[in-house]
Amino acid sequence: MSPGTGPDFSNSAYLFPHIDKEGWKFGTLALLVAVALAVVACLPGFGALGWFVLPSFLLAYGVFLFFRDPERYPPDGDGSAILSPADGRVCMVEECDFPDFFADGSKHWRVSVFMSVFNVHVNRMPTAGTVEKKDYIAAGRFFNASLDKASKENERCNYMVKAENGQRYAVTQIAGLVARRIVPRVSDGDRLEAAQRFGLIRFGSRLDVYLPFGVEPEVRVGQTMVAGETVIGHLSRG
Image (cartoon, rainbow, N blue to C red):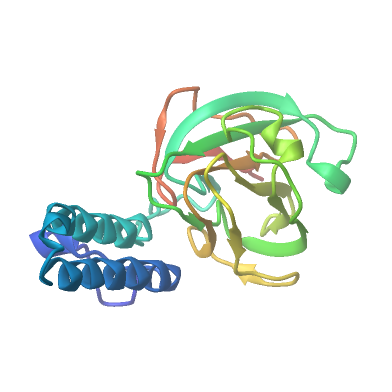
C-alpha cells in the first residue's frame, strides 16, 4: 500500500481492480481475439459467430481478473506474525523437513495453501526477512497441486528466508495441474517486508510455508486464507 492511501471501497475497485503486469499480456491477447471475432461476425455469411462474441469478451475480462492484484493490509503491531503467502484454502498441515537441499534434518511444520483459478495468484512474503537462497526447479510434472507428491514432482521454486530475529523458514511456490509457469521476482540477498509481493503462479497452484523450528501452526485444514493478512503462526519471541 502506498503511503497516504487507504482502502478503496468503491464498486470500481471490485469491477476494475489493479492488474499485475503479467495480466496485461494475456488479457490483451484474449481481448484482441474477442475483438477479431466480433469483426468477423459482422461479415456476410459469418453471422452465426455472433453467439460467441459476448462469451469471448467475458472470457477476456476473466483473464484480466485472474491477474488482479489488490492491496493487502497486514495486522498492525504484530511484528512476529507469520502471514499466509497466498489466497486460498489450507489443504495440508504436517511436520516434515525443509524442501530439497535446504533440508537440515529437523522437523518443521508445513502449511500448504491451495489456490484455485478463482483466487488471487500474487504471492506475498510471510514476514520481514532476507532471501538467503532461491532454488528454482523448472522441469517437473503437473500433478494436482493439492496432492503431497506435487511438492517433489512438480515445477517449483523454493526460498530460504532469514527473519529479522534470526529464525529461518522456507517458502515454496508449486505449479499445479493447470499452471504452466512460476514467476519469481526476488533474488538471493533481497530483503522484503512482511506481505511484500515476491512473485506469482499462473492458473492454479499451491504455496507451502515451512515454519521455523519449534514454531507451531495456528491454522487448520480447510481454513480460508488471505495473502498478507491471515496469521498462520508466530516467530519465537525473546
